[in-house]
Image 1 (cartoon, helix red, strand yellow):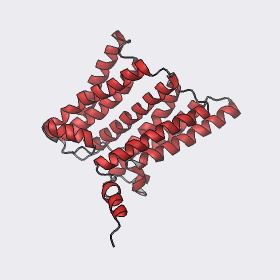
Image 2 (tube, rainbow, N blue to C red):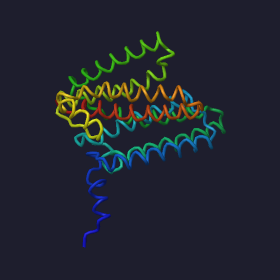
Image 3 (cartoon, rainbow, N blue to C red):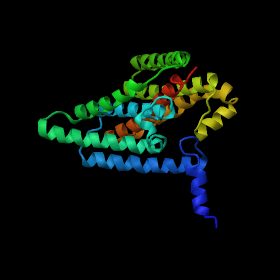
Image 4 (tube, helix red, strand yellow):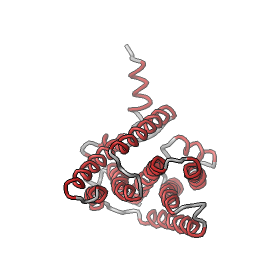
Length: 275
């Protein structure tokens, strides 16, 4: 006898995992993200971790590790540890895996700081760079035209945003310029992949907007205004209305993770594709 609950779970979660998002799993994953964000913030409060640029520096290697691990997992022609248990290294499970690794590194860093007075973030960053080096050693860039297109677009946005930040820092801070740049790396990679290399968007809202703008090959440009408007507005509202600096910086860290992880994954996925 069919089990409606099992069938529903299979249809909307297991069947599409690693390949495609739908409205149902997008909403559920969004709720899980919100719960995880608040739980992690409370944990950092309990550990008395100051959420500042040093924490950002410590976390960035883990973001790059997660994004690159996701890309390497998809390229089965490159033999890596990520193919041994591939289910652990696809979205959204990989976020929990990388979070666990980063949290363990944070706790090690705190222990080292207490014992040897080495700042926790230095130890954490060192561990992150060490595991990231494994991924770097496995990169096999094959699609140099994609690398050139994405790199050129990303360089343009970085120059534009940081140039604007230099002259109008009250409107766009350097931190916000960096966070927005990470999302425009994702937009640049998505634009190139969809427009020139036959990829399809996996997420629900971008797919809807791209279809409205003309489909994958013609409408992928919509990713740029989408990122600038949505991410820019969220950063602006945080600066204007979030009075708790710790919590404001933590939310910015989450926004950075979402942009840089996806951007790294998309950039490397296309870059390692056989042209």
